[in-house]
Amino acid sequence: MIEHKFPESRELDIELNDEIAEGEYSNLVIISHSTSEFVLDFVRMMPGVSKARIKSRIVLAPEHAKRLLLSLQENIERYEAVVGTINLPKMPSEETSMAMSFIGGEA
Image 1 (cartoon, one colour):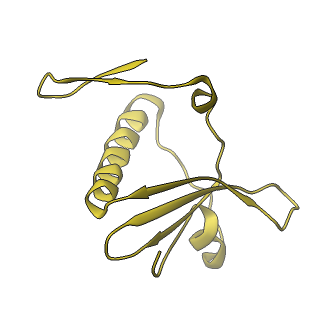
Image 2 (spheres, one colour):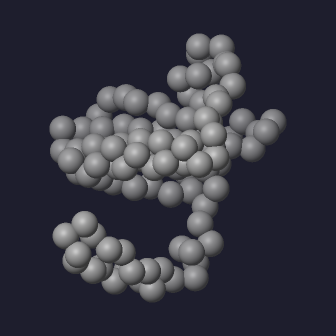
Image 3 (tube, helix red, strand yellow):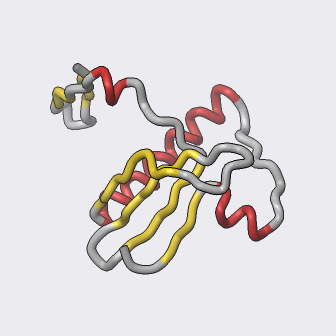
């Protein structure tokens, strides 16, 4: 069980079963959206293989997607303050757009 302390001193008990605790590795996320939701499909691409499988799909309300963005931004800043800057390799422009995300059309 994970206990999370909110700034308002509220506590939330979150259960984490063994299967989910193992996690899934992803090196590609495909992001699509409609007017009411954002869909994040996490994919694992293997070198030299042209077919990949979605390992996890997360559906978020637009407000939660923005909260996720802000939280990731804050956590990356904290990480870089301790560990150092995360450097992204230079990639050709067409590969960069697919390197970790695709933002497009309707979900």
